[in-house]
Image 1 (cartoon, one colour):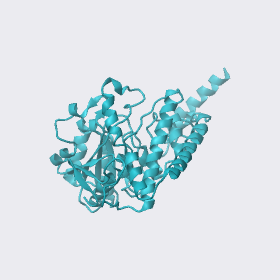
Image 2: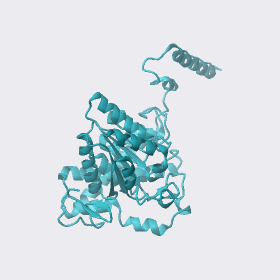
Image 3: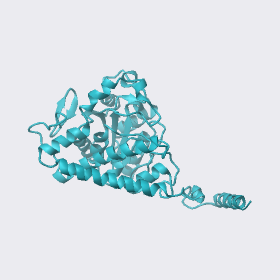
Image 4: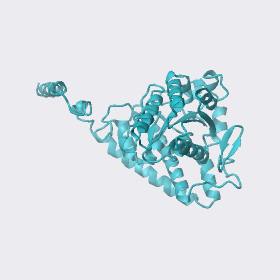
Length: 367
């Protein structure tokens, strides 16, 4: 891998949590490096505030990406805007990179009238058509064959487009994983499969998930190159994904990337990880915090300092606060939007049902 070292089978660029490896220079300009750090910081701060809102009973549900920011921000940055992203439910930074606003994200959590998907999904299940960011769905692994199908369709049309699909280590036990990788391997589909191996599928550790030495090694069975990367090293994730993107775009087929990271928090706001893992394990991974490592790298190169950090955090926190203030006073979507987007051209029966509902609601309000 260019500009990367392989340590214990993991591709890495950054060294210790506080310093970059001497002699290793990133292949990205300073503007891009700072953009990566900004989005990673935004994900962390949004997570902190949204989880607090859930604990206060102001939103119903939340999943954090804390500790896993580098795994999805670095990989998404390697794509072109025309490429498609098929997320799981712990990749908000990929949508932020593409231009999704914090306000749109927060409105989706509240399911209000400004929710981009009109209140039709539970929180953390954003969909952003303008950003080629496909709707998140709760069933595990469904996005994998969808991503392969989208890339296959693009090839048939002659479009120079690839797809990137995210999933967790637990998803490798699902049939969708086999179906997607097998088809992609046979037909050399331009899809990048990125597994965020964060150690746990809710409460099930990786050791109870597979007998394989890694997730990446599973690619061999499908004729797909597998790569393991330090998922807390945003530059390494970018480098590996960029090479996979270039290969796919040139007709070289898919790649399975295993980004080894750690889920610092609970699986969701409904989970208590203290029931199934030791706090000492969490503390060990704190030493590999992706923001600390990348921030140290930027500081060492004179691109970052305490003043810039303070200004960035203040700006993002204000944007979050403004978004929450805006979202909390908005009503829910109008009931008639239930019938929108079902068909390109609504048919007579759908219109009849819509009118029947509106008539019923009007009669109820007048009684």
